Image 1 (cartoon, helix red, strand yellow):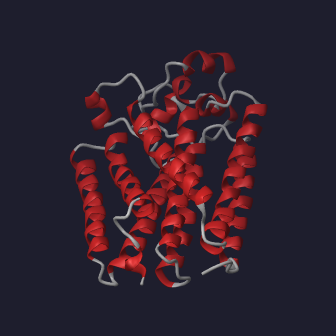
Image 2 (spheres, rainbow, N blue to C red):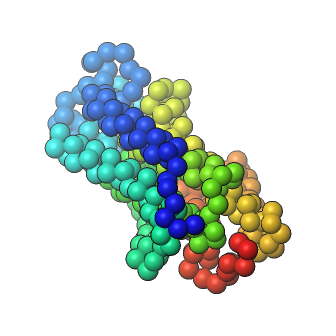
Image 3 (cartoon, helix red, strand yellow):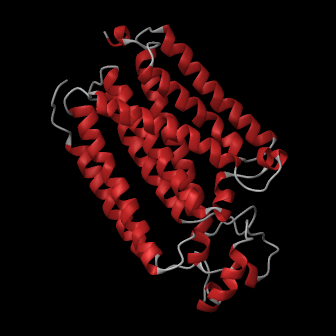
Length: 312
């Protein structure tokens, strides 16, 4: 497949996503912590919020109103209008890169050395960053394993949380596209579905990184919690499905390497689910399938383990 025309479904999908996100960012600028009725509940003095922000880790249901209703800017790490505008522009431009990547990698001419280098650098950077991010903060290893999630770390490190979301989503998506093209991407069926759900998953994480976690147990049915958790769950499930579709598509052709890799990947999901039930949510446990996904994509894209006889 050389210089094929990019299907309109991807262009329309990403145009809708970018437009919706732009509106979302405009609306979010006017919102201080979702779900509260009065202006008095949503607002505290900026000085008081700033004084607390350096030590704030998460909120609890037992906190006082003054502890809980802190100004939105302080939680997101964006302390003035200019910073918010800069972040909005950067994040919108990051989303615009997705349809460009689809057109370039899947439907452009055969990816050359530059695309390979970009994909590999993003993959390695994503792997290193999620590992670094899971280990930041003044917590014991037991804390890290038991109940310190990526979202909770984001309350103390909001800018790094935003980088985590953008880099993880984009590095996995780009390397999925590169792997699909390298293996002989064929339009339609599972490959097309994988690109669509992967796109929706990557878009969903932008909700999560813009709507901060409400902590361990603060009003779990609030709009804020639902928005944050929904974005995270859609991202996780859809990115897992995207890679699983790719592996399954070649496994069903009888390639034992893909069958084994598919089984390992699904088994990792099962192990993570068991650990989440037995121990609880944590950034380290949540990272298990992401680490495995990065390793699989590295083997697919930059080694000879899955060389092209599979696509024939």
